[in-house]
Image 1 (cartoon, rainbow, N blue to C red):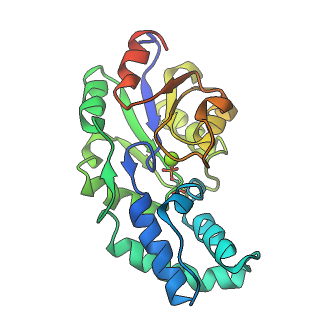
Image 2: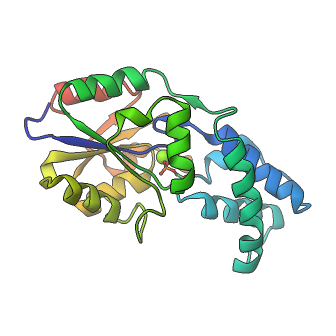
Length: 225
Ligand SMILES: O=C(O)COP(=O)(O)O
Ligand SMILES: [Mg+2]
């Protein structure tokens, strides 16, 4: 492990939790209510990454075969939000070895944060539902600050919060938004291959390491990446 590393920022959807089944259910509830054709989990998997509003906008555009207006989206968002709030973790699953690995990282003295593009109102309840909330000292949602990943702002906020140098913070995530945010913030990142990255290979955006499982984070840190 880099002697300098003091903290790790983790993405949530597609990194800690496979949340697509419940995001897809909320999307389909909204589409049905609008009288639109529903979509598959696999389609939703390629639309996740830029927050709930962009997900719904992509789903509605797909169903309507045209761009959606802000007014149409504004009218649909409450349906999505209400449903998702009630069914956050019904079909979602923790990825293997997440709790064990996070616990091991904490035992090494690392501070852990969540930096997600998921709206903040869903983030803490989801972490709580999977018993993850106690493992993180700092949790930022996609609407906690003025900008979300791939903007570097959330990672700069984490650095400032803990007074960290650039080489003292690492970002771990499944999406190019995570890797691009890390690069823009001037910090290292690990990309996970099992999550959602618009159907693309996470290695293509140039993370410092590519991990095929959550536990591999430990061995890559031990090997100095
Ligand atoms: O909700 C999203 O679109 C993505 O969330 P994530 O940043 O935790 O992957
Ligand atoms: Mg993600």
